[in-house]
Amino acid sequence: MRILVQRVTWARVRTADRPLGEIGPGLLLLVGLRQGDDATAVSFCADKCLHLRVFADDEGKMNRSVVDIGGQVLAISQFTLYGDCRRGRRPSFTEAALPATAEPLYRRFVEALRASGLTVAEGEFGAHMEVELCNDGPVTLLVESP
Image 1 (cartoon, one colour):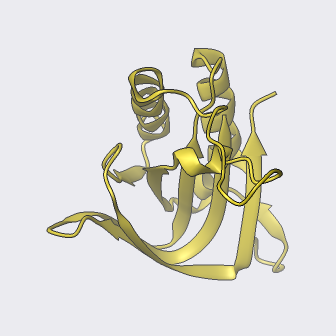
Image 2: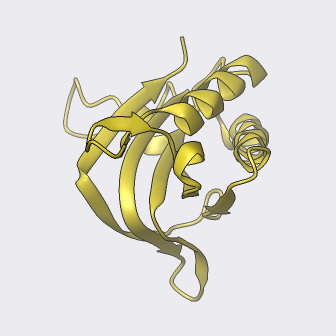
């Protein structure tokens, strides 16, 4: 499992015909699942994202998590995080989990985030979406399951 984490002042996602989710200060999580991922990977990544200390404390040091600040989370499925561009000019997505496997794991990930008590918005699995955000910092990190 691979998550691109962005600290944001705001973020929103929509399809061509309707808005899907919007957040204020918090984290935008682009969520990629690969073949072989399971509930253990989901739990590890959800916990890691919720407790990453990427928000400033009173001294301006990145020492607080999204949970600590009572921030919000926007989670968006993103199979292209497993695009392999090492050969040729077209990415290969053979590592990405198939939708029938990935969607239940993505749903489980979102539910694990919601269990924290934070406001969690999400995109629409498998849909073509437009994402807008204001990256705060910028702070962008990659979280991967072991």
